[in-house]
Image (cartoon, rainbow, N blue to C red; front, top):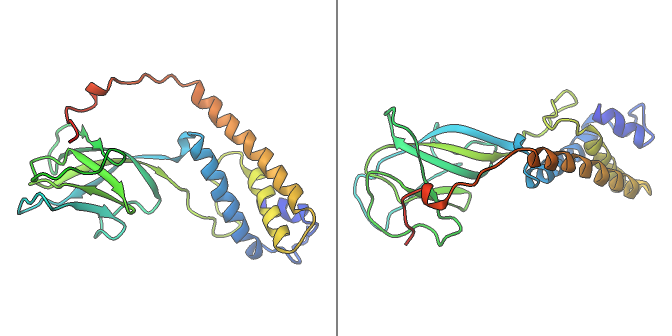
Length: 227
């Protein structure tokens, strides 16, 4: 649907110039733009939850030591490939059936303190595309909630996972493809893409406003006091 609409917009309905292969890089750029705009507006479709990973125990406690989970961590405990930003983490002893306990995010609060490892991780920090911990003296299972990106389109049969976004993606794709070839209409399609994207963002904001949110007092979130 998207590439067909783009070809019609660029007066190439037969696909003599703007084949699917030619349009694919522009379509993916437009697709990512739509995702960023909706993600910034708080659309819930970009949330993923209940990803379970294990942080190995620190065998020799050391206040200068930190451990991390990143893209380079050995499987199956590396970061999810679609992760953009971790939002919340919970922990429990690995192999147990205990309830998960929410951890404290210190990413914007001066980073991790310097202290020897204990039985629990307690705190975490997101930096350099990794989740960093002080570590614990036992293997710890964490539950991860994060903001994700949808996979790129690979061909004309790839599913578009943002609902009702065909026009926004098609107009932005036409603008990029036309601009690359000096089309005087590229600016018009860029304006049409901005309008279509604004409609999607407005709808996402309305959905969020219809949901009631009750803020928890800070004292109930954790008993941990940052250094």
